Image (tube, rainbow, N blue to C red):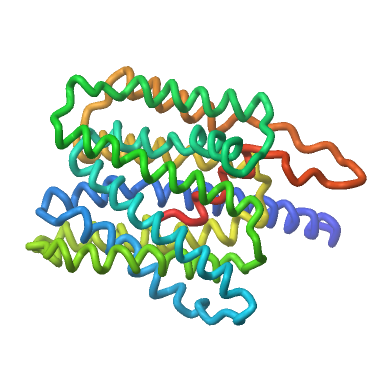
Length: 320
């Protein structure tokens, strides 16, 4: 085998490593509902499960917290986004505990619709046809699985609260598409995660949960899985893989998170999926996989164009 052939094989391997890491990250993130519901079944509260979900990544990312004083305004913005995100994720986990898991998971994936809406109304961005089509498919998918008439009053509050997570994520998507100051990805994640913990730690103390640690071995395994398999490891894989992967590939592989989330709960927790659930899941996958045209090269780059494929990348970076 010649040197050029060896070099070509190595180049192909490097190009393939990025998408593979993104796919593995999406699969890992998809196990969040499974591990959370195992802990719920053992009596742990939503606020404790949410706290455990973020506290380990927060510890690992704490090494990136030192930041030059000139970037403190951006740090404060990431803290505020993280604070809001922590409330949204708690609402999502509470919905997982209260509603059918398929309903909560699909509501979480309505963030493309909110991203488009906030992009137009708040950030004054223009949109293309594919963006509108993607958001419309997501909205149709959510309407298939939501039946307010069949819900109790507590479930209705959980349903309304569950929309907070995709709404906050959508704002995060739009802001990170054009942040006010440049900040490295690890530092941005570190300060965002700290913002999560600023709200989640006092919330856990205020709620005074009866169970702080799992009492069964399966609960400890679920806790380790939630912290490592569904949080720290996929977050690291995504950061390493995203820089080597095209945005449209990230969007397609990112849909694996939805599939894993729904099927793992259905198969391993014996939760049934209706035809409407499956149809809604397929619609969301199609919406995430729609390829958006690359911007045309011009003498001056257009800063106002909003391409949904780029927007899909950021929530996975900040997940969970």
